[in-house]
Length: 88
Image (cartoon, rainbow, N blue to C red; front, side):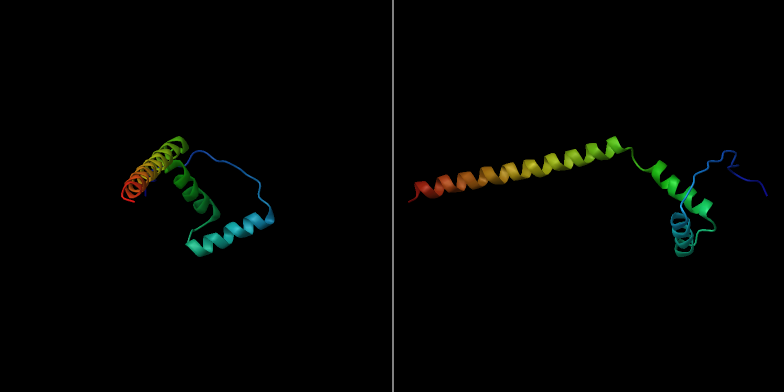
């Protein structure tokens, strides 16, 4: 059987006993075969996520859109108040 993506690099980190136990529990809960598989999958998620700057740009655009909507609502309210004053 040929391995599609042979793994040739290793990393090493130190964990507290509580951190390791937590990862083992997470393995059981998620069905991961090992702590290595679990952490490899987690790293893939992080690496595949859009870059932070891209996420911030999207959030900023959303914020601007909300502010624009509020600005329009305030203009409508101000117009409504002016019209109401004239009719009194």
